[in-house]
Image (cartoon, rainbow over all chains, first blue to last red; front, side, top):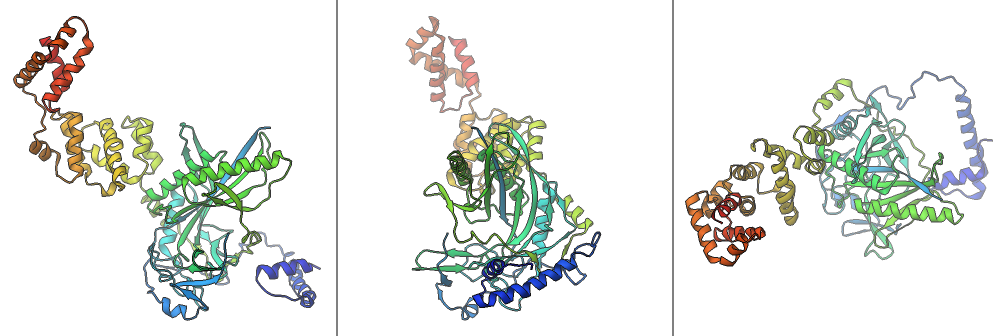
Length: 95
Length: 476
């Protein structure tokens, strides 16, 4: 088995996903199968093959450095749960 | 036991583009909160990033200036973590294939020691927003105007061995990015920031000690203080038999200490992967060569030229090349002072620097243009005015009173070169000071200085001191 329950809990926490204790075993099993598949793929000799960064065989198009967006704060903030003086309000984060 | 310190720096320089790295929102500083955060910056569903060509160009320019390899192909990756100032839940950055690889920064310490610091890499990424913690009663306010501002993260090798070296490195990079015009370098506004990785080990030990990462170093002084504090702290921990914990620490400039950051301590697993929204960035050789040809003369090369071709001292040359604007000003000035390079350097580093400092303005905004200052220096060189009177004329130019020649005429500051007129004044001074004349004649030659002073006073400083000296000696 590729993964342990502690790994699954850690990954879930990093992704901010809530996973209950009775779901853990199922995830360990399914995610392990994916990892096993990757292990199998890693047996292929890929020496000399450039890693693929993107399935499209094209390069990034660039845009000119021009300001094209106008202020739409009011529109965007209609979607926010709490706003004060133009700032989005969130539970306190401090270091 | 004696200890040695190992420091590596990560510098974040905001690139001087008009619009953001992946969107058309403005990057102007100081706007009302969230008025420059568009749907892309806010991470709305369905939006796609489109790369800003100017951000790429500025990164290439930096790479060429430090002798690095500019990657023909670089790839954007997602760095995943959760924080309210990062709406998408990931920062678009570069990981395995950055745009700039290698290169060197040549540093000169205050004591004159020189050293090359290797740069590991520099990569493009987007800045995050800002959190405001005051006046929100248990909540934080988030301003996303800064989100998506292009950053160049410049990562050094761990090759610095003291806080002084780290500061010299940071200053050199700061000078370079401003020379290149790729970053405005404004540290108060956060355009140029630094994190430091610090570790200590017993002197002579090969293996690196456990490092801590110091954040929030937004001035040269704080970099120096925070690193020195951290070195002492780590040595204390080790000498007490403890071990240093690998962690991120925040420098608190009010308390002058570093302390662990809690919120990000488990976020060190960023699970990078190539961003499927962005294709690899391909940079052609011709493009690189075109950019190379457009590089200005770099600060270190210019400093060397000032020392070796103009015969300036190391200190003068370093001051003059401190910023590109100062060096440009100086070069415009010496174009018309006929080889009096040292005199010109004295004026730029002396009177002009003092006036700029006093009024808190940059050299580009100075009222005394290089041509005007040259007009003044020419009159010192040809003996029309003394160095002392020149300071008065400079002050008048500074106040916007016009050209040196006009000021000299209007105020009647021309040196008295008419020997007959000067002889009369000298005679009068001698007649008024019989005691001093007696002292001089009985061998107390020091009193000559007093008599010269009296003549200068009588002429309102307009006599040529050399000539006065000569005349007095004749009469005595």
